[in-house]
Amino acid sequence: MKKGDRAFIYHTGDEKAVIGIAVVSLGPFPEPGSPEWTSIKIQPEKKLKNPVKLTRIKAEKKLTEITLVKMSRLSVHALTKAVFDHILKLSQE
Image (cartoon, rainbow, N blue to C red; front, top):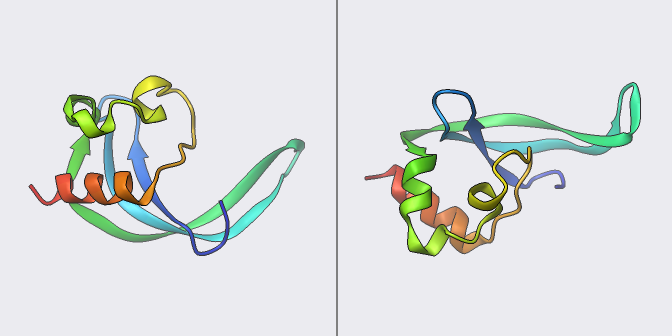
């Protein structure tokens, strides 16, 4: 991820839902205390009209191959513009 990239904010735990959008404000840089890891800084951009739950994402045929569905324990998932836009559309429903 690089400065200016947009990202979804996803809540784990009981909620398991995409809840907002952020913009990368700085990154990547070495993780303080763990130089083998990298970090980024984000700034919240906006809250989604409606959270998009993981169960809804898994039910969408167009989204069955994204890593959030296949490897949900990863912290960062790359999405195509089409997938990003589709999840945004789901948040409008």
